[in-house]
Image 1 (cartoon, rainbow, N blue to C red):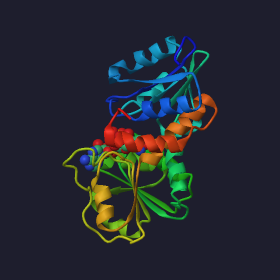
Image 2: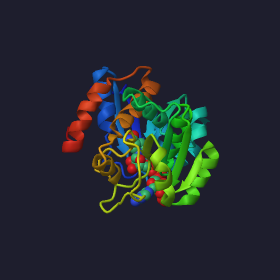
Image 3: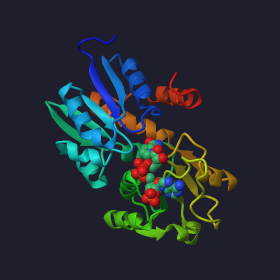
Length: 278
Ligand code: NAP
């Protein structure tokens, strides 16, 4: 039951109506019998600073940040965790004694999901498609996993070059992906390609290993990457696991305990079928 002692949490993103996070976090609070509530807010870019300031004034205990605010929000926290600093974005904030502490749990969520799916990256060749906020977290997770080679390709080459320099990986023109894909063990789609109906695979047909694994961060659309994997009978994973685990790590930062991930899996399936009324 909500009352005067309810601890408040939130997610800030724009758009936010499609987000599963509030369903997931509230189910977890309920399951753990915690007097907490999690709300969703949709600040525009120019409203981000005052929204964060308001959460602080209203004594919220923490919040998540999602697209498109993960990088900008760095400016508004007092302390940034060292991994989040390296990645260059935050998705989780703890508010304690009027101070804001920023973290990134996306890279943890991705690494955990790979581990649970037995996707081995040690000594493997990986290609990352996309060079936005999510790619930064994925590169960070891959770098700590002792991969043999990481390529990054992006629709806008300049952005891939910048990220490649920062993370000490190899940038590659999206039109040349076909030249290296034959040697790659894991392809991670970190781009938004597939969110729009007419989106096409950003590289042309090429030779691939039959053991190539495709991991698409997008989980709510049949993307061209998923189709490519299915057409070629490749193993393919989509971003549900990462989504749930980044939330689980955020939950642990706020409450000190890990939530029931199975419950989230069950509700995410329903959510993807039925929308918000799960
Ligand atoms: P972002 O910062 O806006 O970056 C988007 C990236 O996608 C850019 O590199 C952009 O290329 C590229 N892109 C967009 N449309 C494209 C198209 N039609 N063809 C090829 N490339 C295209 O977004 P983000 O935060 O990195 O998120 C990327 C995706 O990952 C989103 O769809 C998001 O939902 C998903 N995601 C999932 C999880 C999860 O937990 N499963 C977590 C984070 C993100 P340009 O540089 O050329 O614009």
